[in-house]
Length: 186
Length: 269
Image 1 (cartoon, chains in turn cyan, red):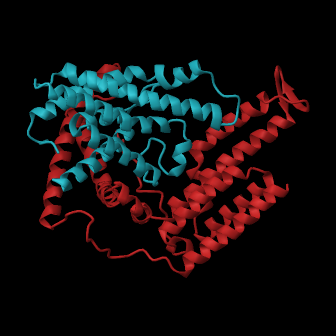
Image 2 (image 1 turned 45 degrees about the vertical axis):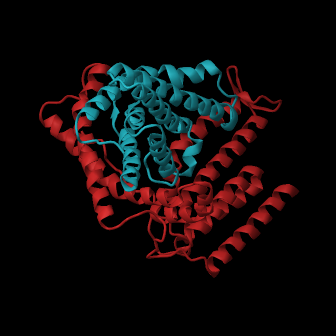
Image 3 (image 1 turned 30 degrees about the horizontal axis):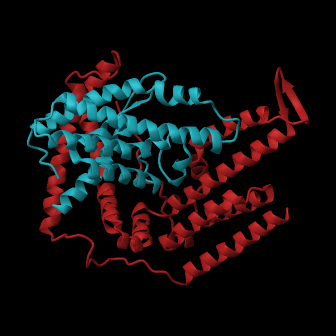
């Protein structure tokens, strides 16, 4: 059982890497599927192993495997978008925890439950993403920094719409996968 | 549509050099030290010394200058942008030139150059590590480096094993994803027109088969590993054990002597 867990954690990290590559070409908003895979990691693997898969994704990128949208390597820490990668870990954990709470009540999960869990997870991504973005542009990068509203507009308002759609997608997909027999849990 | 174009595994550039052959633990240690040291020694002579060390290391490890410059390209745009802001908005009495209300001062230019260069050197130094060390070596090195943490519950072996699995599966799964996308396109799937919701929905027929395939592969691999009696890190032996020999000692000593010189130079200036 332990071997399966190891493989699933590793494979969900790869899925997030695939998500970084699948971008719907839209002006202004780079719509990648990364957040969707990290919500799915939380929904399907649970809080602990979902978060582990995203932590492993970050680790892999830092080691220089080009899994991030901007490649990989230790220097990615200085990229303004790195905070979102940290947020993925929180996202999977939050989503997994809420899913567990719902299934503990004993009733069969509905799309609505999964959607709530995913949206809470998206919140986690933004908390870390925006915090890191703010620190990078104001304290690390040379220059006079950027006011909070500007940070919010480039790091939040421009992408939140896409993330809500992804939350819908991932809850629909997670439910469909749960109904089939391909995924028996870990 | 080709989504997975140009994926190379790691930035690793294989070559037969002294630096490539160094123990990954040694290279990791030097990189971490250098990141701290570059951060605390920010004067121009000190940075010139760091730059010369980077050039020397790249030369010795046969890393083409082009690859090194390219690795820092994404961050370079950012550096240039913020440096420009710095030049014009730092303020100062010695104005070089002004464009309308924008005034470029000597102080601003110096600050911009200093901060920009420091960030650039940091990026180049970390890039050198990933250029000269293959990801699997790096994961071996980290397993060893994090080994002592196993006592506190850090799964050092498991992480290294997952790394091995991921490196094996990344190319395969990327290829399979592309195949699924092409298959759906040939059946008339449309990913490029319509609004955001329509485009997002178009990915469902890609994602469901992708998941089915991924879970099947995961199960097969689990069975294969269990059939070969894999039972975790305890009692496992290595085919190529890491060795810390005189080469590593020499490299570390050279680095310590060099950085002591840079730090004292930085103090004197």
